[in-house]
Length: 270
Ligand code: NAD
Image (cartoon, rainbow, N blue to C red; front, side, top):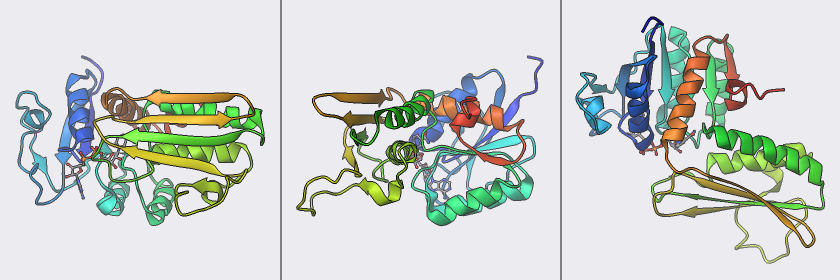
């Protein structure tokens, strides 16, 4: 192995995504586990990261203290409660940051834009390559089909997911709205139960289902007169998100400051 190993710091290490990330880093030939961080006072603190991920001990203990070191990339899949502190810690040290945590606040979004002026940040509600392509196709289809076709989407996730609708569903809805000259926040329809009226033309309906163990399924429908198009992505294993996030980490390690997403990482930006 003659190339330099990239040191990865995982935040949210004890979680479903954190442990998937640990496994991917351990299996890789060009990355090493720099540190693993989880919630202060949580059951993960002090545990060996390898064991947490279902493998042998590796001598990296989970800590509650994020001290990003130069030459590392921080990969955060946790909860939004301390996103601000994590962004600030990376900015202070000039460390690239990959954020997969969903359900961020508007203040967090603003902070991301600000932080992108001094460090490379890749933020994506979904790090899967397939979903990134689905986002692209959603926009292209909406633009090509025009206003006569109504767009509706549904998503299904495992019973533990906290935010609803998923960040990915919101991104897909936004891609459709942007491509057809609408503002998603003005046309998104997430609750029809209380409305006693027919569908309005501009609406983009979003339905969220929860249950079982699915890492994520999204279907976008374009409904026309007498015909319908469905674009579906099904995630079979959350390792796809971990692999995408680590691909983003490798990429971000050599980028100038900026706020990026998976379109940039995959070279799909026009
Ligand atoms: P999880 O509940 O299994 O794990 C979250 C982990 O974060 C837990 O170990 C928890 O203790 C830890 N945590 C909570 N607060 C923390 C803090 N302040 N500092 C450090 N660690 C903290 O959740 P999960 O299924 O692994 O998902 C984590 C996040 O990633 C969610 O927001 C989820 O929606 C998102 N996610 C994103 C993608 C994507 O591709 N962007 C894919 C899957 C999940």
